Length: 171
Image (tube, rainbow, N blue to C red; front, side, top):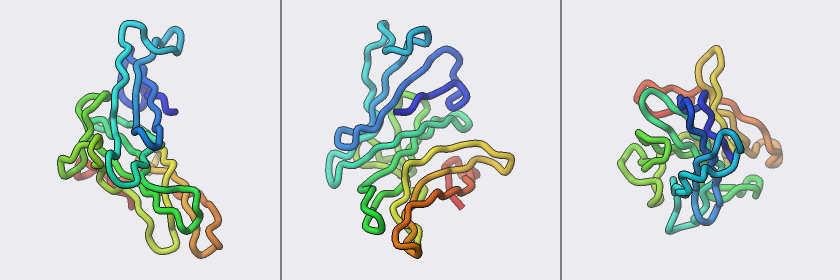
């Protein structure tokens, strides 16, 4: 479960909790800052992303605010199978933290959308579980992957993010 903090999304008084439920998509609720429970005056369960067809797998949400947009990072497909893992990191963008989120092509994340940020390449296989952090060099995306050159040993990956297009690009 992730908690959207003011530092992450630029809010002042609103707090949210979000969770990726694998088969039923990513959901979010607003929290009461004094109790940490769902805000009684807003019991809406926001749906942020889902995969109605295909593997249906989407989880590990992470939201950041960049410029005037909120960016929802999530990992898609199957993890935890070593070098047979197919997971990858995708992103969608919205003008409100509660969505709706769309990918670069305009496809809703509620309808299988998502722009690829990190996918398997070479010996780096099954990337996911991502977090975004700021470092002196810029924004970093931190994730796990399986090393195809080391018998599928799980490892930690770190890449810089370039936002020059308004969309995150890992390099």
